[in-house]
Amino acid sequence: MIRIRTTLVAALAATLSLPALAQDNALNLYSARHYQTDEALYANFTKATGIRINRIEAGDEQLIERLKSEGANSPADVLLIVDASRLHNAQHLGLFQPVRSAVLESRIPASMRDPDGQWFGFSSRARAIVHSKARVNAADVSTYEALADPGNRGKVCVRSGSHPYNLSLVAAMIEHHGEAKAEAWARGVAANFARAPKGGDTDQIKAVAAGECDVAVVNSYYYARLMRSARPEDRDIVAKTALVWPDQSRAGTHINISGAGVLRNAPHREAAVKFLEYLASDDAQRYFADGNNEWPAVRSVVVKNPALEALGPFKADPVPIAALGRNTPAAQKLVDRAGWR
Image (spheres, rainbow, N blue to C red):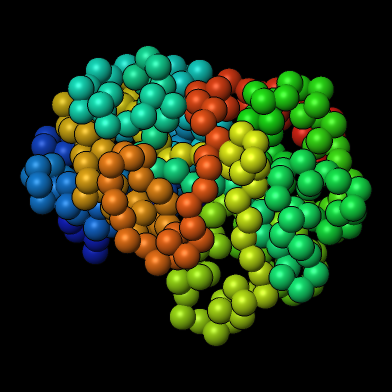
């Protein structure tokens, strides 16, 4: 379902029409981020600049299809989506235009932005391993390779291999080990499934706590949400499980990003660039961390998030995000061959 919003007049969100997106002194944002905490992020941009944000929310694929359909007549200025594979797809389709900004180039690490300036990463999340405290020793699941070990037969829960979160992980495996070894690993993971892949990352964590499986692969912020929850059932899930940062003695834990780019036919290009630069500001970067339990892209930004602090520091895989995007088509074919449906 696609929703159209304005950060200033939420009550009128349901009645906004596409012609409304043609306003002057406005920014038309297509966003796949659907976190309530982002409302303050957008409101602060409007307060600082006077630029109203009109927002259409939908899934990454829906937004990309919408942009393809709208073509040169699209009113959209910025596309904000999650995952390297989707950013690569949008770039491959020619949806973005290059941006040269001293602010963005100085604040966003080179590994988290497109070399040609077509998209920039503004927050990161890690692909971690969650395990049962009672049934699994953390040392036995300390690497991604362990997920394919025969000793973990019948123990692994994970969502579909075709989901972008997993495709990007496989893309990283291809970058590090080549396609043949990555495929052998994916086959081993599929052989160790406790059940057919289904649900989202929170469902995998719940399945571990319930004893449906012993090990799960999840994005870190899903686990952090449960850690920060006051609900007794969520606290019980955390008490029964633990999170491991994989591959700490090797390349490091796989990370992915939320990122954005200025669209090729943006009618408000200047406002769009201002918005991207705002997302790289200290205040906006803290919102990403505090609101959705992600890490800021800007390394100098210090945040206070009790869940992230409790999970502790870790070594992150330094592979460039752009490389993950390039490897995604091969990753999709690989998981299909491996039977990771």
